Image 1 (cartoon, rainbow, N blue to C red):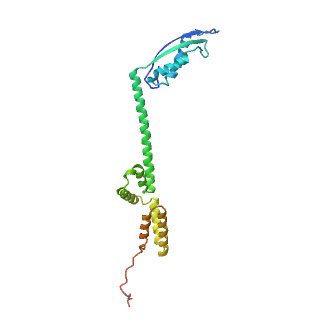
Image 2: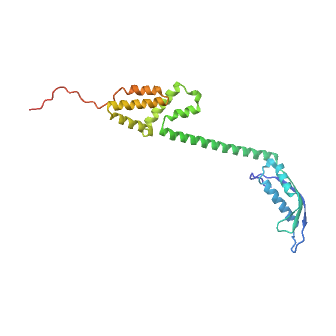
Image 3: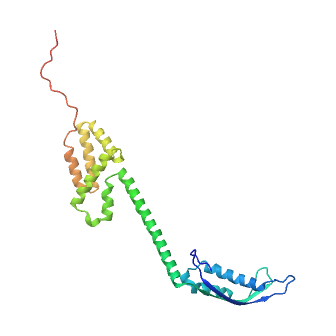
Length: 235
């Protein structure tokens, strides 16, 4: 009798009793009809039960076959039936091992998919803002974050920016730089002071001070060649 695992079978032994019912057209093989019905009930249950659970399949089948039942559309009554289901112990163990390996493979595939998706998300995030590498590192290794780690991450950010000059945050920095170069000194200083206040507000006092210090230096402007004296025109 077939099990859910292709090529692996239960051994079945069926006993029972049947009765021919009065009919204008009596059934010529009532025993075969009763046997077919009982085996069909047993196969439906066995086909959904693993070999290692032969006792369970047997109990469920006998529960269905333990009382009289008139066969559908046939002048035959199954009075009772009992089935004995067994399975080879080695085959049952082999099937259970195959199931465990299949479930493990499915679990590993889901894990690989999640890791791949996380890597894809990280790549997309870093293309937008390379500084997010620090956040990902901190989430996975909070105990390893120290001054050396911060320096490594800062170098990573610089390298990522140099290889991805088209990212959003680099474009914003360039726009701000170009804008500052066009401002007069007082307006530029006001902008730098405002940005420093924002840094302070978000808990970055050192960055704010660095910004104020950097703002004391005027932006570079195109150099002009010094004059060597009054110009002379040819007569």
